[in-house]
Image 1: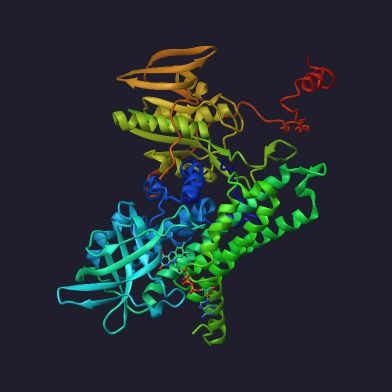
Image 2: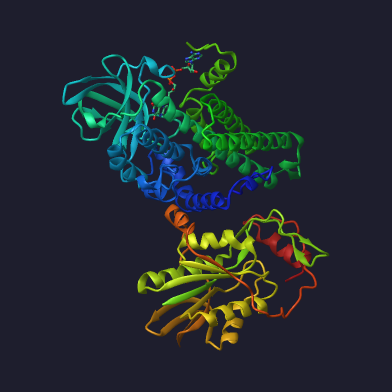
Length: 390
Length: 246
Ligand SMILES: Cc1cc2nc3c(=O)[nH]c(=O)nc-3n(C[C@H](O)[C@H](O)[C@H](O)COP(=O)(O)OP(=O)(O)OC[C@H]3O[C@@H](n4cnc5c(N)ncnc54)[C@H](O)[C@@H]3O)c2cc1C
């Protein structure tokens, strides 16, 4: 049962508008009713619960900041963060599905697409009628996407796409994929590849111990003829996919606070209810140290991330600032998940509690969208001016 | 059919309840407010269902200061067409009912719905008082409501069964569990609520009829003893010798 109570130690809710809180309450009520009761089973079966797609759309989880004229709700960046936080409080996989749809599929079509592409795809992506995926990572190019080998040739009336992408969220059921590939001169462009195009397949990746409620797979392109109008005309070069990643990483920074809050909330409640040596374990100093450090770290992350949201809304957040928040918050959530699991003793390893699931999910979150170490090196480069990862 | 739904704010069920001013005032500091669930889940949602089926409009009304605006916006996001806020502190049930009755008399409605009670004060008075003020029929604690033409059919739970009543509109009904299912607003509703009309109305001159002289918190829960389900003898022993109730 979802017994979550919100924790706001520094009264940061005062920084939110009434509409932000309404958006949060709406997401929370929907998740409690529709997702919390089914998520453990979906995770165990390693199935993305497709039946939640219309509900995700109805709470605004697909492209919250996409303007109304393209079918989105046109919300601000803080609202986007709040929705991601509520989703990830329940499951990082559900948040991932929504992040990919919003930041990695809708965002590039909105920012780099033609008006025809926007009108054709965005409303259907906002309503969940179309689900999208984002193909950047390749089997041999993860942290170093600029080395990608997926490529396309100009055949006059169409492009011919060849190559393969790996570790692609939503791939097995996506209706379309935003694929990053090199043209004949080696420059990276985004192409919208649609299901049904000949030579395009999306085999699922099995055996994951993490993000099991999110489907992951490959995107394979074997001489796929892509219509010329499916190339994103607005931006090329590695900066184009990196712009999408900024948006998704920003969502992750908010989302992982949700995971941390859920683990803390559960640990706090359990430690007050669990009696050992004649008193609640919350009365022991070592448990209090864990709990006190958890809420301290959560509060710091909440403040950092709210500020990042304001900067992003003003168009002033840098990629390096986003890297810092993504890295800090995922790491914070993972540490809290581990400590919270210990506080639950043996109960903590069961599916009665969401903690092990969160912990395993976070192993993906700390790796995708730029690994923990790569983000550290981005901060290093930003402050020293010297890149240590190339 | 034009329906007026009375909405009040109530503290979130997880809120810490404290008092100020020598235990005569509820301390609202740091308390999250929600739409009183009986008003929201039952009265408002049933009103929306009736409107969706038969046309008309749903107007919500609350007596309170601007601090009530968030719950009003939520009710609008769920689907009400317009809102009225009588700009005065809801001092007691008589005052609140009088204000709502004055507004309702000046604007005609076919139905006035409210929740069976608020979850904080549990007064169950406002509906009945509105009906009395307006000289309208009143049915309390309804679990089912249908309207055909000018006839409303209402069901209420009674000891061991159900009572079915019929009455002509306009009438006042307080709604209990069973009347409808909770509706979670969606993003379209939240966006639409931004521009729906919220009319702020000055209160009429009416006195409060009662005054709170003090609040007390319930006694602290005492410790719980867990008895093994196999061990009925110990349970009987405890009930007889310790609790002394058998
Ligand atoms: C569940 C899941 C879903 C995903 N979804 C998507 C998706 O939808 N779309 C997509 O494009 N990708 C997706 N990814 C891929 C993800 O972005 C990559 O896994 C990630 O970028 C890391 O690449 P890699 O796995 O190849 O690791 P590698 O790049 O091989 O890194 C291995 C290790 O080496 C370290 N390392 C690498 N280079 C350096 C360096 N220069 N200095 C120091 N250390 C270094 C890394 O930090 C890491 O610890 C997903 C991954 C997972 C697990």
